[in-house]
Amino acid sequence: MEKLSNDFALDLVDRNIKKYMTTFLLDRFGYRFKREERIPDDLIGDYYQYKFLNDKLKLELTILFHPQRMKYPCSFDIYLSLKGGGSMRMRKHLQNNALDSKFHRFSYNESKQSFKEFVDGFFIFIRSEFEGYFKDYLTGNKFEDTPIDWVGMK
Image 1 (cartoon, rainbow, N blue to C red):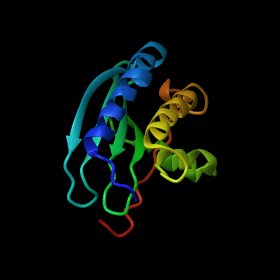
Image 2 (tube, one colour):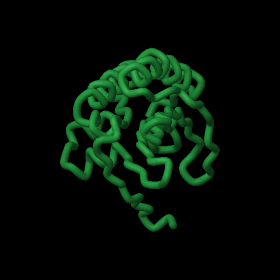
Image 3 (cartoon, one colour):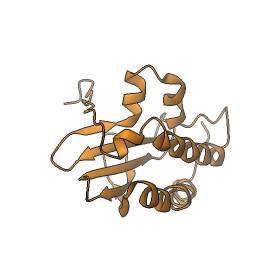
Image 4 (cartoon, rainbow, N blue to C red):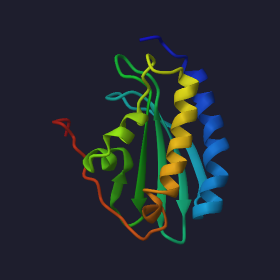
């Protein structure tokens, strides 16, 4: 696996968050950009989160980016959380509902495309899913808590 520079990867993700998500989420769904932060994690490696908040619906949308680490490729994850508790992991939701053809888009596979193509494609794909499959979730009309599978880590 070719080692990507974290600076290069983060810069590309930052630009795509601004290009594809910030205005789109505010205009279409009322989610305002809240913050971006690096989360240190000794177990799975540092990751970066981008939070968007819809105060009216009391929903928080978090886009996580995991840079390449050891043998694991770069990947994204997205959570939709209720302020009072409960969280839906969109990646896991797609997998649980037999939508594996969409699930694979969350992880980078360098043999299929460049990293830039992967990141651009991910944000175009997820915008389309927000307008389609996940629209009722983002508008607060539907919610499904996704339990965390700790795989013996807890």
